[in-house]
Image (tube, rainbow, N blue to C red; front, side, top):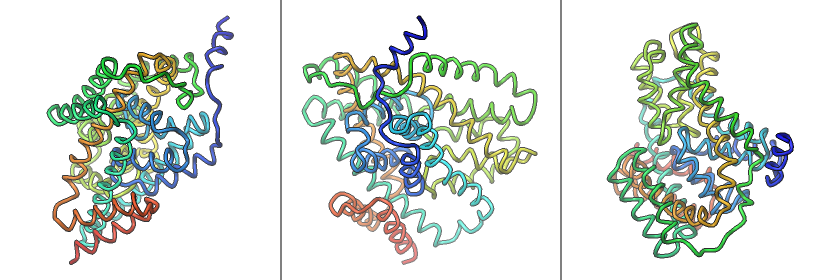
Length: 407
């Protein structure tokens, strides 16, 4: 009977519409060109996979972003993992993570060997140009999502309240509060919008698999501290796994957690830690790949490729286990009319969260002069009006940042 029930759970799941190779190629392009941090990554994903390739519609994408905002872990990588799962099944999910993650992980380990060169004016100018292009990418994402997900007074008001919550409640607490507020406001003010079939978020994950993933997440969280006493490898895995399991708010939030771990602070000098953090800002891909750098420079026998591999797997694993555990229950929940009303509100709140992030930290860390503003506006026009591919706009803006820094 259990097997039969599990089959019924799978009956409503859509089959993947693509191949793992297709997923790998799409995410490799994103892994090589997605500069600017997790918020900007969501903009790149939206352009490439929602607008251009149409793997998922706008509302489904916003639902997925809202779910990943709820969960601990690297939100943009979780969204990418889920999109790979949707398009290419379990192998597609692994292909998405590998293609999006490995370019930045490899670059960070290689860059660690040439850190002194990153103090030059040329490198500083390129890095600044990459920060500026992130402003244009996030602005494009906010504008496009606002038009489709907050088109009326109730949802626009929810987005505005989300901005206020994020501004006055800094950190992940404000983001979670904004999502919860959006769901409650959607129940109160966004009823009567009709019921849409949840085909775009029907993942090939059964409730049994989801339950096993949640159980494995909890067992590792409890057992790894005990195993950490058996050797340096287990201690390193435990440190990165715990950091990845307890972080809300994206890559920047995980950095102080990593620095506080004894297994890391005792094997990585403060100078090396800060130098790697600076390098991580200059490359595309998820900031969580900073873990590969830390594992590689660890002053123990686990340094190099072995340390980087352990750290990289450990820091991503808890977020993916939680995501797989949540997906099958999310599917059935969002099929209900009340849940869809709540999702209209949370989608609007996501727009507000992205809008707040557009100002801080994206705008405030990149736009430091009128010239920077002009460069960012140019990049925005090239993306939205000229509709140039994002990677071309990234290259042009990096050159623009170099020119401004040297002039």
